[in-house]
Length: 366
Image (cartoon, rainbow, N blue to C red; front, side, top):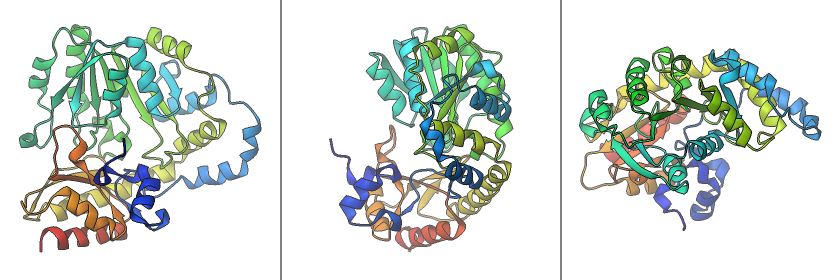
């Protein structure tokens, strides 16, 4: 089925180029939530000088890479599993635990629903409430965790709302789930973009709970979606061993393995990314919250969600007008519980952000 025009985003550059006759190198992509600094300079240089690696097999156990992940995250080496993007690990985890009924906190990324349904499971959504600015109500969520649930899925920070749950609240949620025999999957794809990461990350909880798995990757923060590399952290040794037993060998190509290891060690790049995103997030949020024709939700990640308050314009029209200016933002109407009043964009370089906000102001405020 062909994707609706206004639901296209930066992952669909070929389709956008075909539909709108705009060369992809002319598009400014505010929709894909990828680090605007591009690939780590160190990784770029080392990959260019080590292309001959493709004539050898990767290490089947990815020992060196897992050691680097352990150093980067503080997780134990034994608790780490690697995959061809976090999507491979989502699929593998769900196949193994075979959840009969799952609760997904939404609106959120669609891959969780897809994998659960493919496995024959049932899915329910726990809706984040707009009146609470899409922040979680812990007690209400706990009351929604019925005995027949097998799995709770949390994206933290959440896409597309850019809201986040503190690790102290996650501790309460995971503990409550453990008492009911419910697994918890936390997707931390955007965690490194947050300002106070130490208050949000859940890896510190993985040592205490055997019903928890945490997923991360390099696609967004390290601007490398084409390399396809993700990793999972789980304190349940039996589950990790089963995942490794069922996982196909060599699913991560040697350049992805080599490059990812370098990225995780590029401290200058990591520091520069955090500094720029923090600055742009503050600047953009402060600018948008002064507008009278939108409602904006405080962002914790590298993207921001807003709601159109004017009745005479919708997200489809905004998308179409922006793409004629070679800019892509995300029409959020395809997410559960959202509609054609919601849009999302990520923070790029300062001059690009200013270009977007100036044109949005013309469209919405004037």
